[in-house]
Length: 238
Image 1 (cartoon, rainbow, N blue to C red):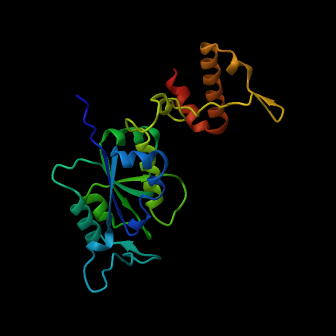
Image 2 (tube, rainbow, N blue to C red; image 1 turned 90 degrees about the horizontal axis):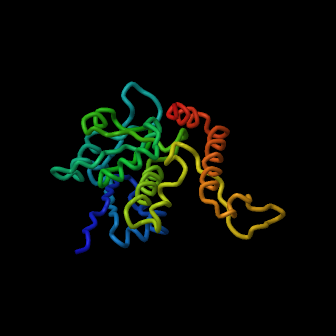
């Protein structure tokens, strides 16, 4: 009897739902979506606005530039997409959130799905963040026009780890950040290209020495490019 696969379920709340699936509809994520390995539902935030003008935002209390997404609108949208017993994490894509890490990606994969709110304007009223227990996540220290691209980045990172998405299990286990280090350099044919040769160790056939070389390269690359990660990794070796 074949094992039943329960798809990873993503629900997106956005002012621009037509942006999805976007790049998630192609390549690995797109094929996995067609196979039913994960699902994607989009919800238009404006559908939950009230009044003649269906406003989703208002001026910030205390003054200041920009607009803030209203708590009544966002709260109604979240309540609509959350079924009884739905334990999926509720995530707000926000530049002030905790950085997205590979460890977090793996935990979201195990959660069976996620409800993702794509922020816009100056932000979201803090009261709905608190009352609906939204976890704020950032994909980097820079500002985007909204959370849609961040949601796509997060989902792509999760989907590629789902069973049946990648060809080899090793493809998801031997990469940057999985071991706390950056990934080692890669090479392929031709052996000689523009006067540069593949490192001899990689064509030696000695798997033990190859593994040792790759580990050394990962350590050195991390030390040079990401000293923050290197220090965390080094502390874990003692």
